[in-house]
Image 1 (tube, rainbow, N blue to C red):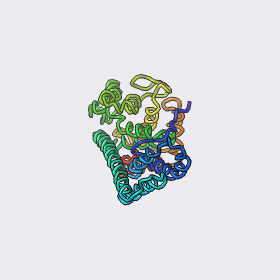
Image 2: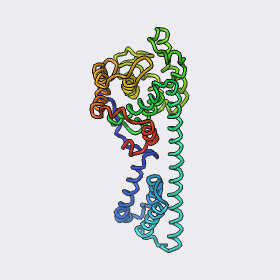
Image 3: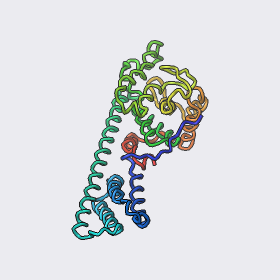
Image 4: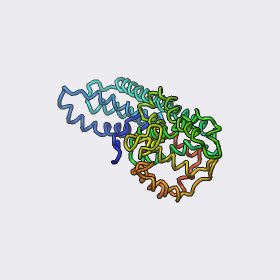
Length: 331
């Protein structure tokens, strides 16, 4: 069954496009609206003119002050002359221009505060992922690469921006529970004993309990990724043996991305595997370890990109990660 895909417009302060479109739609429709609606004296259009500077500030927060002031004046001009206000004077124009510019710049300021807060959150998460990966030089940048592959899959599935963000953050934090696993086990060059593997298998639950009080992670599905990313589609995974669509979609995406990076990265106990071998392994495990649809989507990406998929540097990946909410990243 195809996973439920969200086609909702991403209305978020991180995505300026809807606000920009909204501003220009209002601006260009104002003459038409004034002509047809002011025939009825019961209809007040002034609230519409107040919405315009708010959309201007949010949508164009990164533009110059001259740009913002110019369009604020355009809005005021429309209000004074299209609505044919009886008190059209220089003083009235100056007062309205000041008020509208104030609304615009307050919107700009609040948008910048929100975006800075979100960027700080992502930088903290990335730093946490880096410190976690640094415990093992063989798996350095593992979490970042898993997040990158998972984001590719999410975008190919046309998930919403909010879902893509959750998948990316979940990729960065999916192995956070390994902080509770001794390095003697993580770095063991030989095969693990059953007891040691049982300890390894606790890391999803440890990670879940570590972050279960972060309400945002509970709401956006990041906790589901941490807890269920080692479940298998056939029900033979851990920690709870969930199968099929009992496993959250985001966790099924991470499962493919995690396995791919594990097989294409050199480990303390083996060398990395050939890309063609990895392709065949994922293909042969569709419906067993992996969700068939998600495996097919990733194999399509892999076939298209080939070895290029492995070549992104950490610096390039960081820059992509820091902009993951922007429209140019998720489009």
